[in-house]
Length: 152
Image 1 (cartoon, rainbow, N blue to C red):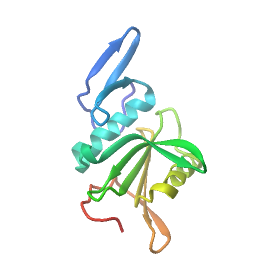
Image 2 (image 1 turned 90 degrees about the horizontal axis):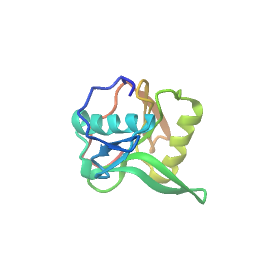
Image 3 (image 1 turned 90 degrees about the vertical axis):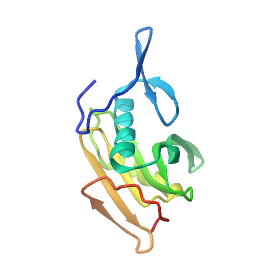
Image 4 (image 1 turned 60 degrees about the vertical axis):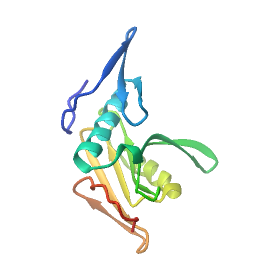
C-alpha cells in the first residue's frame, strides 16, 4: 500500500484467498483492505495514539439518515456525553480533496452537529472547526486533540 503523510503503525493483516484484510480495532474485526480503508485505519490509529481519542468513544462507518437516504460517516468520535465531537471522511490517496468532499461531510454534520470535521486522503488533511453559536467556521492547521468537555 501507498506511503501516507501519517506516522507508520503496526497493523494486523490476514489473507483471504487473493484478498488482504486489515484488523479494525474499533469494529473489532478484519475488513477488506482497500486504499480508502488503508487511510481510514491510519486515521483511526493517529487519533488513538497521537490525539488521545478513546477507541471506546469512536464509531467506524456510522449509519445516519440524510434527507431520508441512508448514509455512512467513515469515523465519528464522541465526547464522554455521547455527543459527536469529530467527524472524519476518508478518501483513497488517489482521490483529491475537493469541494464535493467537503460538502459531503458538511451534510453529515447537519445531523451529527460535531464541532470538528476532518477530510483526509492520507496525503492531505483538511480540518475545520465549526462554531455553532456564532454560525461560522475556521480552518485548522492540525487535527484536534480529544476533549473531555462538552462541545462548544
